[in-house]
Image (cartoon, rainbow, N blue to C red):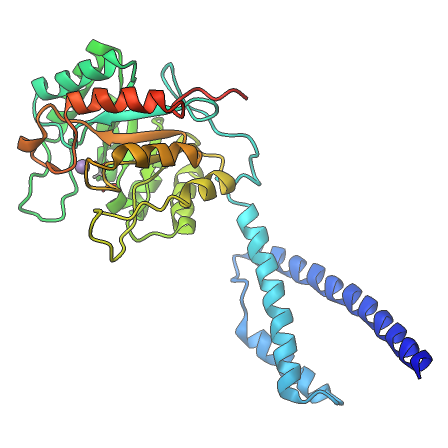
Length: 360
Ligand code: PEP
Ligand code: MN
């Protein structure tokens, strides 16, 4: 009896070995088909072909499996083959670590971003006046921070809210930056303003609301300026990476990613910081990853622990809003910190030991 069982098990093992070989042979063929389809621009999933194959298999089916079971088993095999092609497709993304194992280091003049550096980008939500920007720029310089932000074109939720002062704002940023030896990052919302950006600023920011403005992404991809791309408030990590791919595939490899919180039902924060996006993005992509601790929280009282969490999770840098007098700010008055709070923040984040050049 037990000898008979042994024999049958041996036969099952042999069939398993053959099945394994056949399944992998099939997978290799499916991969080749995927390549041909890709080169011809044909979609990988072909429901008509799947239906034909299933009909053929059920017609040929001698049993004992019934046709429903056969259909179910073959559907699983089809799906595994599609997943395999999908994986190959992902591998091809220029922003993926599979494509480039080493970290991208973004160069903004003499400022290096990514690799072993930790950077901080700070400045007001909106550019309001020369004095306002100079005051913040001076505070950055004193802290040894090199990247000044400020919005000149503001994509506001309400058309009646302050929309930014446009080109004049870029000019104010440039002058303050030159005075204090800083680099400027500012949001551009219109593809036709990329030329303007190149005249005044050092880094183009693409904001959350424009993460899938594909014409803007393409225009930024053709620019000589590095791009700071923020995650859309309802975008998945994959959609975020595809947005970055739009820029990189146009020839601009100098892209930084910024997690700035996503929309959830939670109301005690303005957005919900997706902290897991940081290690995920670092794992999947070679691009530097920032966390915006201001727009993600929308409040001042938890910015320090959130900043520490971001750095501990592997972020290459932080973005935060600083305004000389937040209570009179023309946008985001409730979340910006003043200069004294900024100095205290810098002391505390330095003391944490997390905001440091990390040795290789
Ligand atoms: C900003 O950083 O100025 C801004 C508008 O943020 P977000 O696009 O993330 O909302
Ligand atoms: Mn803001």
